Image (tube, rainbow, N blue to C red; front, side):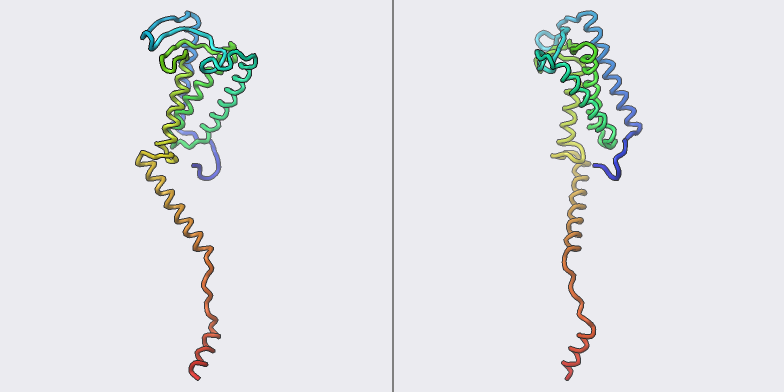
Amino acid sequence: MFKGKFKPQFSKKSIIFIAIFAVILIIDLVTKYYAAAYGWNKILIKGVLEVHYTRNTGMAFSFLADKSWGQAFLIAFSAIMSVAIIVIILFLPERFTILKLSLYMILAGAIGNLVDRAAYGYVRDFLWMVIPGATCNVADIFIVVGTFLAVIDLLFLNEFAAFPLTKKAKKIQAERRKAEEEKKSQSLNDDAPSESIPDAANSDGAAEDKEE
């Protein structure tokens, strides 16, 4: 994946990714603010999409909500994961466009919820959807969307895909296999014992004996 030494990857594409990250984070925090300030409570599509402001002291489906140590654990976990994602983003080559975009989405969502946990001790949720049947927020949506995109890219799209579907991925993997086979073949040739060259003097002596 990486050629040469590890070094930060940054280009014009990264500026676009950072802008997308900032927009997602701002939308998440602004919608949370208004949902909390005005106590949003509205049915958009009955039984499918509704707006109900709630406070979630745990993770998805209120996991760890009843644990005294839950918030401290979630804050630490979110912070560590955010740092890990940032490091991956910094060193991931720019050619992995979809994967890098998905990581920025996940990072924006993770930081959005981390801000809530650190500032309030809970996450502000307000969107109830029939799928997954729980109340969430903009951060949660982009974490799910980003994760989905990352899985799709790793399975089917990028040059290291497990089941490549794009022409580019198939071509790169075919070239990589060919190069590995050539390298293996060259290695076998190098390890094979070389044939000994008959000594010139012995050859001459043998020729003379034959003439006699």
